[in-house]
Image 1 (cartoon, rainbow, N blue to C red):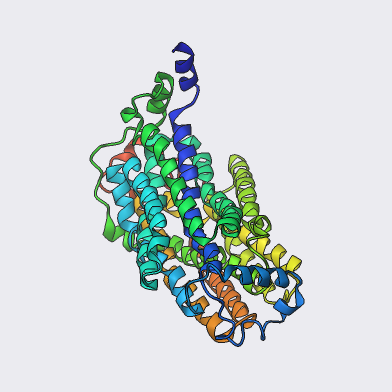
Image 2 (cartoon, rainbow, N blue to C red):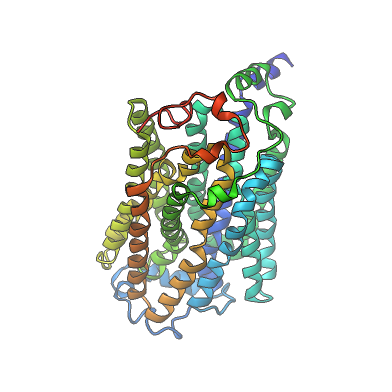
Amino acid sequence: MGSLKSFRDNIPARHVLCLLLFFGFALAFTLRINLSIAIVAMVKQQTAKNEYHVAGNPCLSTNKSADVSEDTQENSKVDAEFDWNEVQQGIVFGSFFWGYLVSQAPGGRLAETMGIKKVFGAAILSNGILTLLLPLTAHLHWSIILIIRAIQGLGQGVLFPALNAAVVQWIPLEERDKFISFAVQGATLGTVAALPLCGAILAVLGWRAVFYITGALTLVWGIPWILFVYNSPSEHPRISKKEYDYLKGKIPPISTEKPPMPWREALTSIQFWLGCIPALGNDWGFHTLLILAPKFMQENLGFDIAKSSLLSSLPFLSQYVFALSYGAVMDALLERKFPVIWIRRISVIFSHILPAVGLIAMTIAGCNVALSITILTFSISMIGAFSCGYFQNPLDVAPNFAGSLTGIMNGVGASTGLVSTPLAGMLLHTQGSPNGWHTIFWVAAAIYITTSLPYLFFATAKVQPWNYIGTDLKEMQPMSKNGNIKENNKMEE
C-alpha cells in the first residue's frame, strides 16, 4: 500500500487531467473526421451523373495511383448504399457546424458554472453514442445523418471553452502555455490517427465498422475520465498533499459566485472583435482542409485513402510536430522580453498568410502528386501556429471571462462551416475536378488573407477595463504599465 501511495503521489492529478483532455480532443476530432473517410465507401460513385468527375479531370488519367483508386472504388460498390450527389455530401459535412455554432457561447458559461467533469465528459461520451447509432439509422433517410451530425456538433462546441474552465481551476499561470498546447494538440493527433485507423478499418471491415470502432473508443475513454477527473483540486479525493499545497499557493482563490458576464462591454469591445475576425479565416481554411483533404487526394489526385492512409495523415502529423516546436520557440522569445503583440502578429502571419500562399500554389501544382502533397502538408502545418496567435485574444483582453469569450470567438469562426463545405460541394458538383478544387482553394486563400489584416494592424493584446467589472482583481494582482497582469502577460509592448 505504501508503494502504491508513493506511485500515486508521483503522478500529479493535473497531469492526469491534461492527458485525458489530450485523448478527449483526439477522440473528438476522430469522430469529426471519420465520416470524411467512410463516405468514400458509403456513397455510390457519381461518374455517370457528373460529366466533369473523370472525363474533365486529367489527373485521374495521368496518375498511376488513380488505377489503384478505381480498384478500391470498384471493390467498395458492394458496400456503397447511398446515392448522394456532391451538394448533398457538402450539406452532410456542413451539418456538424449547425450544432457546433449554437453551443459555443453557452458552452463557455456552462463549463464555468458546472465544471469540466460533467461538461467535457458528457460532450465526448454523447458524441461516441451517436457515432454508434449512425450506421444503424443512416439507411432510413439521409436527413437522419444531418440530425446526428448536428447534435454531435452541439456537444463538441463546448470542448474548447471547457478547457479554459479547467485551466482556471487547476493550472498555475506559469504552466498554462504548456498545458493548453499539449491538450489542444490532441485534436491534431486525433486527425493524424483517424486517417490511417479509419482507412485500415474501411479497407478490412467496411464503412460501418469505422463508426462502431471509433464510437466504442470514446466509451473506453469515459472510464478513466469518470474515475480520475474532478472539477478542482479541492474536490479531488486522491490528490496528494504536496500537489494540493502547491496549487493552493500558486492559483489565486476562485470565488464560487461567478461575477456576471459584462455582455454589453464585451460585445462592443473592438479589441475583442479583432480576435474574432481571424477566427473566421482560420475555421474556413482549417475545416476546408480537414474535411475535404481526403476527398481531394482521392477524387482529384487519384490517391487511394484506404491503401495510403499513413501518407494521407502526413499533413496533420506535420502540423502536430510544427505546433509543439513553434510554441517552444515563441515561449523562448517571450523569455527574452519579446513583446506579446508581436508574438501574436507573427503567429497570425504563419497561421493565415502562409497557408493562403500554399492554397494558391495548389492551384498551379497540376497533377503532380508529390508536389501537391508537399504543398498541402506545408499549408496544414502552418495552421498549427494559431494557438499562439489570435486564439489567445480572449486571455489577452479579458482573462477573467476567457471561457465565455472563447466560446463566442469559436462560435464566430464555426459559423463558416455552415457555408464552406456546402459551397465546396456545390462547386464540385457544377465545376467538377480540377476546376472546382481550384475555386475552393482560391476562395479559402482570399478569406485567410482578408480576415488576418485587421488583427495584424489594429490588435493590441492588452487587458481591457471591463475585465474587472464585478471583481476586485485589479487591486489584488500586480499590473504592468499597459494594464496587463504581470503574471499572465509578462511582456509589455
